[in-house]
Image (cartoon, rainbow, N blue to C red; front, side):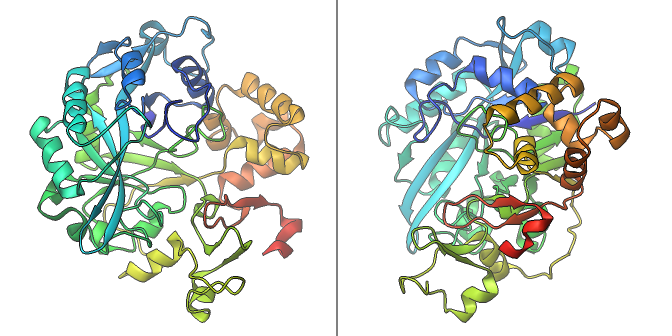
Length: 419
């Protein structure tokens, strides 16, 4: 048995998030997606923290009992009995000077409400927490981690979306060139990194600097919709009946990750270089030809993750790290259905197809990763849709790369000319 976790999400109290984000909706769609445990997100926000404190604790996890949506979408009988488990989690944005201006996002996993209250009390000495679910503080990563460890060594601090230009610790805009540079003497308290949507594990394997860290993937979702929540997740080799905060943290710290679920990194909003306002994007090689200057506006390009990995890598493409874990590269099911129908993600027709597939096969991740052609044919799924589902599973769906805050776009074979 395994546990699939998405521990980096946001609440309705974060900017640019769905106002319908609630525990009820998160639990409903996590079950449909096939996620076993979620992060709460945003525990630093005072109003949301009051909601978190209403959840029932067991073994360091906090359970929401969903009475309105009792249908079992692949959830264990234990989950149905106790409710759906959450890890107390949140994200902070640190903006500070260290040689130059730095902007670093960190994900926090916290073992209890009591520890979360201590974290919040510390944050109150730095500034306000009530204006955003992901608050901003003017303290360095090194100082912040030191203070987290003084509160509790059971807090897990994870560099969020490591490579994204604006707020990744390795980002092109304000990031560092090594983990030691970023986290200094607190580096022993960093056990894992988050890939972010615009990078995949094999890209991270190209840096020997990352060999000693577990590679995690989470969605950073700003809504509960199934094309957002769980689009990236981490698979832990933990029995559902033995699930606890300590088991999850132990797996992270001992690099006992079974696998990760990733989107194609080209799907991420910062994979290629470019300018959104100029409607221009390009590969790392083209950026070099242009001296990183946009040919439309003659300003510096936003340098994406693909270029940044090339800049820092000390290994060739295709290198496999000694600690490499398997990973699945799949786009959300709604993206595949949208390719099939040629209509928008949330069109009524696409929802009809999606709901029928879920009713037949249980969860989205089961459809994306497990259900074989004969089963799909037996249930009279359209043959073209079947082919797209299988192509997605083996990584054969083409994606026009995202850039400068624009999502990548899945395209079918007949649309290769778009590249």
